[in-house]
Length: 110
Image (cartoon, rainbow, N blue to C red; front, top):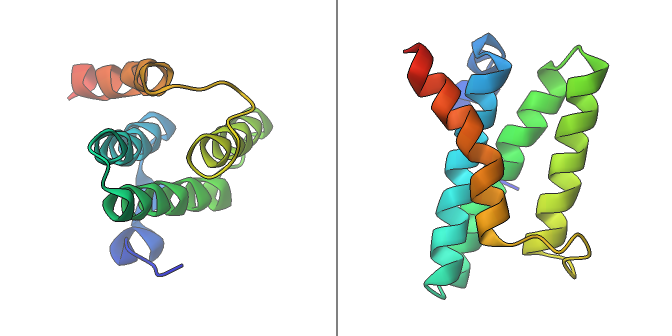
């Protein structure tokens, strides 16, 4: 996988709060969901790969076990939804609902 977020991968990502990181991940997931609903598999995959990259950057930066567990589960469930058999029975609305609270919290604080 190519590094899409070079500036973030260089260390800037770890300066974001956990909520900011999750909101940014959610933005990429939203893009992937939107492209999936439009039937554009290529753009959907690109957006999803960017989301995975951000999750991986978060996993590298996390020091709290609870957040590590949350991120690892999130990654597992997203991969299952986009590339797997959807064993967790996820749907676009459940993903939007999950990430909405992070986006709301970031916007409320700024």
